[in-house]
Length: 303
Image (cartoon, rainbow, N blue to C red):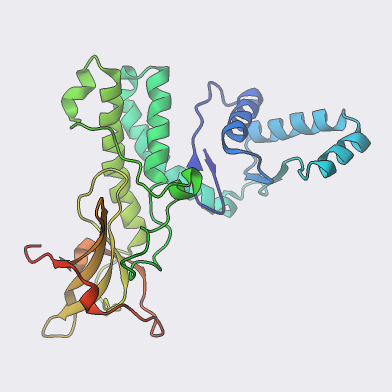
């Protein structure tokens, strides 16, 4: 798995062996599809160490003066490989967290469904996994503007498109595991990954300790993520516009503005949700101004 330290996007490559050759081949496939990289960071896995030594040896066999001149004329440079100190995997927390969030679920799914996947289906499942993880929102500062685009995601940066990567049409259930149509098997497994990864990802954003001491209440202007059931790759976010405290002054439910984008434009809706169904993303800042309530187009009175 490759992950970008700027956009937090991931890229998954399927390798036949975890040796030096497999590492270099995967690196070349990644560069061929995603473009040149300047700095590569990793731990001290034996395949990483072997790949770096192999590439360094090839580099030293070249004419250094001509090579330096060529790189200067083309405004490029060779990849700089930086490895963490031995026994310091915690120093790679950015990518280790991404690996854990996907590997844990994929390992469970493949134990159940590996026998029904061939090489083509496995590569398709990995790419579907990429699309799911890369659809998570990165920004929250435009939620108060009805005319703004949807929150930025790694997929937006990679594809330069604002549309969500939607799954193919159809309903995929357990019976598709035994279907002769391999593409339906892959889509069912991808739906399972979406359901499980989304739940586990949300728990990492929300601290679930015992309520034995007072915590900060939700306030107007807080940006939250809703735990509602949504289609694959769709993350529903909103900004709290009204809190509903109980007799003790503790907020139990809130009303929030949610922007939904459709073919006719962006529509602002008011939803009412309990705080147990919300994940706090960004706390309200006193110097932030919000649009008037008159910009609201409709109200969800049944939710």
